[in-house]
Image (cartoon, rainbow, N blue to C red):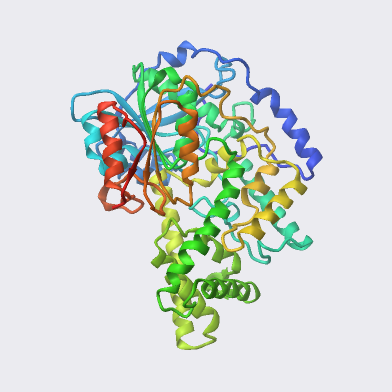
Length: 561
């Protein structure tokens, strides 16, 4: 039975109260629990890949009501697409339940048919556009590979689509920062905590209500995991008739790539991971570390830089930090009212500062000065102008970014990102422990802490967490790992940890660079969301390894561009 159609309303409802949540989680354990791994049933292993030009899907997606996927089809020229059938649950692959997802292919130009699987990140789910993005940034790859992209299970074009209400679950940057008025995320008083937990409950309920259902009316949400996805992808490898294949993944795509290599080490050829998520930390630990890393970036890098710019924020780092802290307190007391009833609050300032190390310092400073003018300008012309600028920067631009991001991904991303996160192991379901942890994070990173977000949502997730892989690292062949030395999003320690786990790996570090992502990406038609790349030296090393199979003889340090 193939799960078909668009997202249907799930019968799953989040129960109020931890006892009911625990009981419900126990009820799904039998269906989602893992058994010893079984082979691929013939019905899946023998399916034929029916390639066709991706843009030809435009009308079909439109007729199915998939407006975002239809719009994306128009920017996929030169790519072929195919739909894959896969077991819904790889723990029981022969139980008759099926799911579908899409893959894309950019044929190589050198006569080679070796597949290179690509993933630009997000939750590691990837998009059909990835082959264009990577070949645009590194054209030589097409001389050696057919580049493969994928819309994994849980994405909008899959039969296991997960759909969340973005008004409750957050922004397109996947930072879990939905509308949060009426409380300050730094406030852990009883009323504030109650409001924040209530927001998390609504987020969870609406995500589960928007998940596609199985033929018997159950939710597909517990099957949207890396454990399931890496088996989907190995099925793709088999259907491509490749004994081995290669992988190029960045950011969160490195987490998927390392699990694919660890689960099927005998299928690994050339593996490149750029901006590596720490393999020794849980998703929650990574998130808490990121708050602190961003706070340190604000204090040690951004504030001293601002102090040299001659602005009203201050001429030394300490005064800059004091000015920003005061601005945040004043926003908490007097939010800025924007058209449409929206308010810009102290909670909205933190995501801007969280962007330090990822966004350009000039862009962050410009936003801070605009906000400051709106807060302190009373009804002066300068204040009116600042509010008008905020409408453009914080209402129109996010709307455009959200819609464009949904087009490039084939649909909104909050649904599969929530499912992949909350289905991961090691999220606490102890509310008191979550609150204590979050309060510590808020105290340590008051300018970059984003709120309870996934910690509170995943604490209420009714399905049991699942570890990605039970395999060891000793059979995984050496791979190429790349990092910016001062990356605040995926700190360089993650790449170093993985290098130590996988014997024979090589690490390329871009010296002194405080940015996220190293390798260049180019989207077609000059669309935004490309990545300029931080080091031609590191890019050359990656391309040389992928095209020749030769790892550098030792770790390398590259200069930034």
